[in-house]
Amino acid sequence: MTYALRYRWWVVLLGVALASRPVHGVSVAVGHFLGPTMTTRLMAFTSATAILIFAILADGLAIAIGTWLHQRLPTQLLHVLASLPFLVFGLWILFDSALGRHSVAMTVATAAALMAAIAVVTYRSQTSRRRRMPAPSAEKSPDTA
Image 1 (cartoon, rainbow, N blue to C red):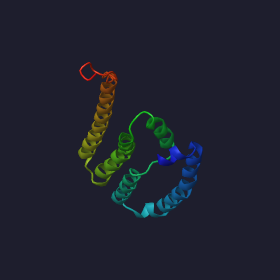
Image 2 (cartoon, one colour; image 1 turned 90 degrees about the vertical axis):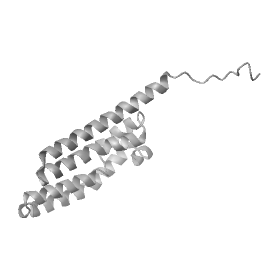
Image 3 (cartoon, one colour; image 1 turned 180 degrees about the vertical axis):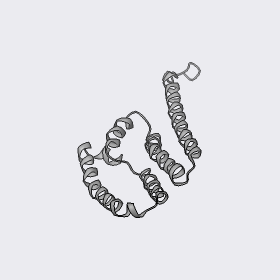
Image 4 (cartoon, helix red, strand yellow; image 1 turned 30 degrees about the horizontal axis):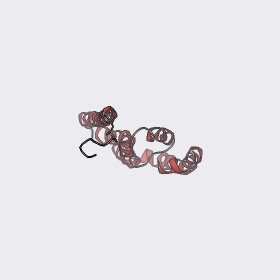
């Protein structure tokens, strides 16, 4: 998000695209050769780990949407909301595919969605309350004159 605010959007997006090319190429090559040798459970753990790591990073369309949202929401709330889908999907794969705990995956996903909704509603209600409050008067009271 910091780079998207300092540099033009297309420069950041081009940098992300160029940097992700070799990363995705290596990932596909490794997956192609190692995939057949890995068990389904090991593949699920590997996928869950990768997605949880991506919860810390974001790229592409997120830059454009993040820049737009940055003008409307506080930075901390945006960071939480941006990482939440990666966190949910990573935990879903971990609990559902890797550990075979479908009910835990459902619970985690539902709890994360509820936390996001509560955060947004709380922020919006606090913002609307501040807007409705009258501004303090600049006039001096008759007692202090």
